[in-house]
Length: 330
Length: 302
Picture: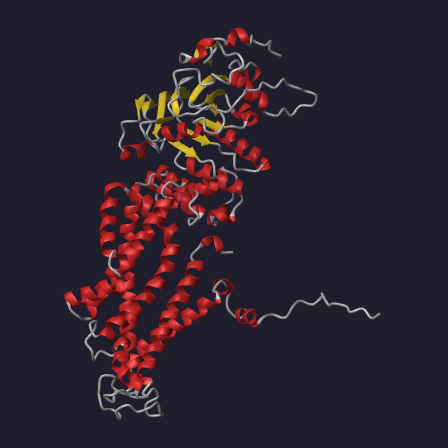
């Protein structure tokens, strides 16, 4: 395990954009300028409703799809100009866990083969060393050696996701992108998988990008939260800041919509009117304009960049601070 | 009022199948018990045909190529179980020898068209773009002709003979595999396990042939049966028309053609038995392929 100085950014995502052509010269803006850093041992969560571009960010970073603009920097070097062959090298440091373990495991491969493949293709281990590593790996994710000889369909959803995690960790990556790793799992299994991820992160000093729409889970695992809406980050900051003191009207609506598991706590719902607007050729305006409870005339005429309003806390709304003053902590 | 008591304490009697399996080792029994009835029937029939084909290499009741071993148009009897044809050759011997041709040619042709078609189809489906367009346009040109007509055309052009018939059949069957493989691969190209395969270090070839193709084999294997049955029919048709193999080759289609003069005058056996042989082989391929497509799907394994 390599050690890095404090706050060393392994991955820097800069102004990442992905526009899909949808015909007649129109473009769907799936991601429209996203910035964040991933640091060892820390978790950045990307939250937002479906269609906000969360998964597209992960797929762009892995270059499963090509970003339209912006940059992804790994250890100080951009990975976007790399050829597919060079990119394979980078997958030793950069790995991903997929949302649905049913779809991301080849139904014809036994677990042993699934986990052996990255070792064969990325390392020079011989057969005996690979077996040792396999046994180590399968136990690391809380399964037993017996599971190595099972097919994915012979295992439960939680066990399959453990295999997905083991596959990502097989070659000791430093960064793992988790694309809704618990979304397809039962609530009872969800906690176990989250605990496993946390344990592995501490043990291996992993940098996590945690993509989720499940706010209680995010609050539990993340160090930093970035809230996405229609391809943009509208608010970004330390987890407790975001949850305790949300400033952007969209964040406030999102957080107030999540259920609270505390007796006697009632919360004022912040409601947004109307539907999410179209991501196809959006105008230069705040993405929330038209639905926003604190909308001003200028909101629909210009872009709203992220502005620093506190320690590492950024909001894409110039009216948020005066409209929603900071709550006393405690 | 008397009450009838149902005895639920004793287990039901073991079925014959279960009792048969009881003497076989457990793992083998587990494998065999997955075989369906159509698997047993199809495989059984094919093994029978293969057996006959092998046997005919060493022994037939009479020399299949020798005319005049019996009288002309002898009806089935102990000496000639299936009778003789106009030239007095023994029909049983010819039928046995014919198995070699019909079975051998169709199997080799199916293997060739399966390999080539699947290979090209996988490339076409996975890489798409220009490669796909070029391959598909070629296939469309070939498929514009009805397969049987096309086969006849080529055989007429390049001449008769076993190798040529195999080549023609492989060529005519190939586009179906190509299309099937292309469609299957295409539909799975963007599946998550294909993306996951890239992240663990595979290149495009590895993803296409190691990860996607094995998941597409079910329908392709099922199609080999239809294709093999079709191949048998084409071989027989070419033989019947007298353009496939030389007319005195003991091939079933040739034999039917030779017997058609006799049908009107009452010598039904000359054409009937080769026809039954073709029917049986086609049926066997259909049954087997159907059962195989079920068996090769690991999600149905228990």
